[in-house]
Length: 439
Image (cartoon, rainbow, N blue to C red):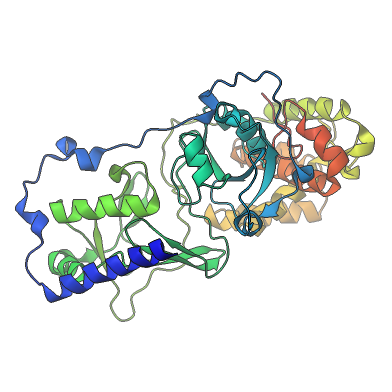
């Protein structure tokens, strides 16, 4: 606690001294290097993959503790004694709850425990193939046994090139960063942080000085362009010119957000809202950008049939008595590729509820199909999935449909806990409690 107080006090002292000393910023006296020659700007954090470690203990096999029950992180954080070296508490990126996994105390074997924990917690196994990383609660990589011990065996799992997400933990929780910046959770959903001591008064005034003359109407994202004005956004924005001053902000912003490089941060912007100006509620999904070639993610009704047959075979191989009733052979959510009404409609109902609950139809500006699906489900229409998979409708929804079914399966199966949970977790195709996926 004394260390945290010292960091904040140091930051406050710096800001107070800058307020008293209005002299030009010292960094402006240095030479502005070509951006690709600026080592500070282009620095990149190296990935530390625990999945690449070689475990020499052939007898070690990680297993979930406490039946793999999800536990809020406040529990492990509040332990009076350090966690013993026979277990680790794992969470996914940005999450506030996780589970205990057994461990043999050898850091070279932590990857085995991390991979099983990631699968148990619902991580995508396809993405897991590209590498698993561990981070402490302050967003720093776990590189060795010492780092793990300092983290008190409480870690977050990041996959592939995932970027760090600060967990909210609970309203009012505070993170005091290494430079004295303080993040305070003010809302959990949507997640909102209050950031203190990032800007000084002098810096705020300098930003306005540099940006006011360049203010112009704010733009919104268009088709492969960010140069579209819209009635939904009437504020004014100015991008500040590249300088030592603005580069310093990119470095500091990357540090707060735990980005792997300052190049991941945009240039500094000044945003102004005059009286009556606004930005209406919006969703930053970049749905209008064409990142991939046309038909790169094309799906067809045959893909749905293939998935349904595959999933059905997998379910038949399980002990039916330990499965949620609706997923058993003959149940309404048992994949039946030949069924034209009962299973397809139950499947789309799960998909519809998930999309509505997450506002995804609105995020994709596709409320027309929100209504279309609802109307046809209420009619108990025949061949609804086949109709939806027509190239003129929404075949692109197939991955989301399968994902919604899989998530529903995970929730239902997790409720049965000990017996089925252990059975499902031992399957090579497990994601989460029992999430099936095709190869």
